[in-house]
Length: 91
Image (cartoon, rainbow, N blue to C red; front, side, top):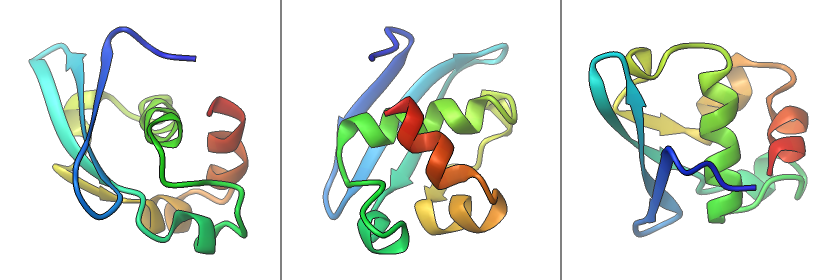
């Protein structure tokens, strides 16, 4: 499933430039999925579907304007106990 309001551009080394709208305009963050498969025993992978799902998951917890400029999948998994399962459902 793709979200037309969520732009995803692959970068190097398992990172993605992600853009979405917020009440302040467009928000762009860099999302690193490097190591996602290892951290989740293969439930998450380094691909655009997982990048989009991860950002949708984060946006269900906070507004786009509140996201940090750089997001690492390891930090997401550490912050939310259900992150791997919920992100895999969204991918």
